[in-house]
Image 1: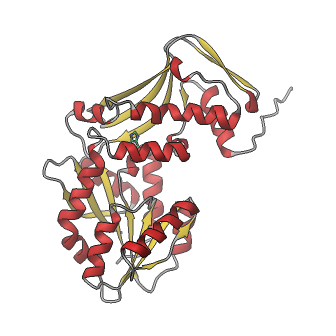
Image 2: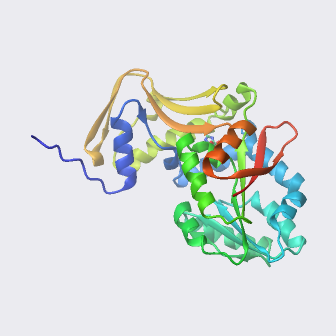
Image 3: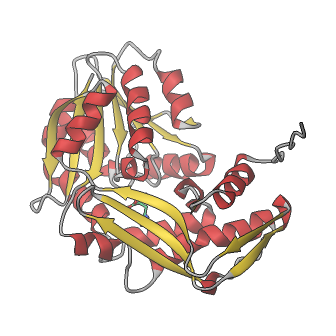
Length: 321
Ligand code: AVI
């Protein structure tokens, strides 16, 4: 029997792009949106009038910081561990309040990027001196393993910004199980989740008038062109978000406007597209209390409190093990 040798790849990115574009239907992981340009575009998205998520979560943290602080604080103090800290803009609302209240706590921002952590530490030193910051570089799972041994103080794990929405149901359960396994009974998990709402509002958030979200989606093709020596023509693809109000799933696609062949030289690959064939690039799941309760139950967590904005567009949940 002839065995076909599977291709070998230099990076996980190369392997994932190869598999995503050689299976049917085609798909690419949204985790690859975030190169330098992708980070910049996402910063712009967070300021778009259509992208309500950031502003709504900001207002929840501002309005409920006292109650959130009372839930977090404990006699022996606490460790505040933030997964995917970014520029910490929203978290600073809580940090400032905790500092003013003289809570005993350490802030442990977790990020894959050393650069992000350096910038965040520098800005905290300037804006909120007096906070004990212990940056943790690495993948979430690896850092959670490392921090499971931090048992002297209560742990509060933060996961803001509806990042949970970018995971499939299966991935979300696996991720939350990991969180739960790193917690003890007094620890807390605080998570943001975008809510089901008027479908038009969701669609607008992923299809802004100025085209920043389209550029964000297509930046994935630019990244493949640059890193894998490919020749995607960005104008030959449409940015196409859809929203299913029944499941709460927003999905983004890139749709080929014509039959075309794309060369990806580093992968030694020619990718054929039929006219109007799609590449699925992102899930942005919208939740409600029922689906959150289901997710928690599947993952061994209990939802003990929630905070929402006045229109229930966004919610922040507190979970215990
Ligand atoms: C990072 N994440 C929560 C964003 C979202 O809403 O799914 C990413 C994004 N995609 C398009 N616009 C923003």
